[in-house]
Amino acid sequence: MNRLQGRTIYLDFMEKDEFKEQWCAFEYDMDLKTDVPEIGRTMDRAGERFDDLAKLQGKTLALFGIYTNDGKLVGDTSIYDIDWRNRSAVLGLAIARKADRRKGYATEATGLLLNYAFEVLGLERLYADTLEHNAGSRKTLEKNGLVQEGVKRRSDYIGGRYYDRIEYSILAEEYVGRQGSS
Image 1 (tube, one colour):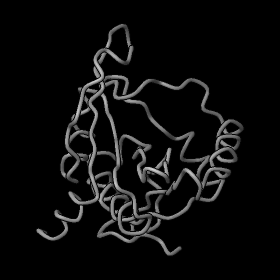
Image 2: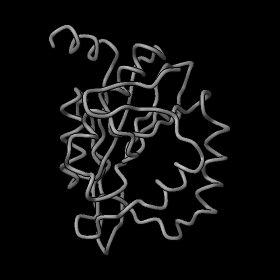
Image 3: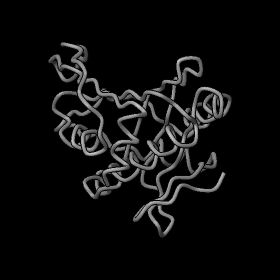
């Protein structure tokens, strides 16, 4: 497969060394608390994680690195838990370093991934979720046409308090409709 080219970024498969660097470079935003911190991100664990994911790649997973057009790896995105019978999957995305966030990379990567999911894989439905206060993630999903469909109330306990998780989805016909109106 050729890389998925966007305006300022592209998606491509990561090599193991790239994945390990990306995984270990992830910077949690401890002030905003947009995700549950994962303790112990080491190169060894990253290599094991890559090996586990490689077994799923092309079966129930499509994992890509997010690269700027000059080749800098800034994050990763995936379609995972692919259910081929029901043609549905979950969308995931992370920009590793704080300095690379809020530059539009996530929004553009999500658009490329939606195109891949619906136009290449032929999926019918994609689902994503984010914590209630993660305004950047919510904006990214909404800009790409995902609609809020539910709330998992008090689902995540982070930093001494509970947070709701907002659930989003987009259907193939909604995606196609947005392409026709662009």
